[in-house]
Length: 281
Image (cartoon, rainbow, N blue to C red; front, side):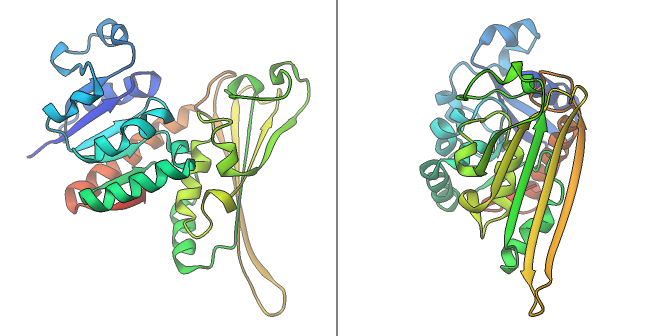
């Protein structure tokens, strides 16, 4: 069996989770691991032969699929470079809200004949959204995410939301504007904007709510609007997902398993038949 060579970029909780699963998986071989702080890799006993000192040195390695689980800035700086050497699995798709980054990666997927795989994360019904978008029947998409205030890592906000005592809407508007405000929190919304290709980041609507009563859960609500009939009736569907999570946790516990399932799906698709473009998995 030919093993798929995987590169891991980032070694936080999710990166460590993936490493522990991949190092003993019969279908994969770890090509490299990179982290901004090398000491973390040493402390976690990552084999020295797997540690990549600089991402610019990726050209020295053979790699089939590069998995980013670090920060959206990695895609902006290195996304094109990654696509020169393998398919790219982008764990921080909020980076794609930057139009320049999106356009450059889209061009690179065509030039290099490779794919950018986007994990569905906590998005429920992503494949249905994608199909509606391709058919042109998707007319509206709103995603509401409610978490404990300490779980939001915002780049800018009015006042200290950690001190609130009742639910507060922190933001509502386009997902494009929301992604740079909460880049670590709304990857699910970014994945939805990719799936909703006929609407995109500007026309997918996002709302985040800081709720101090949510001590055990992240709650994600997805509302889809389809076409209206001549008699005024409109297709709508709404799903609500409660993801177990502790206060202060950016990612719910169920999302880790979902992320790995998306990675397996991307690996299977890549090994079966190379694809191009942005692909929700």
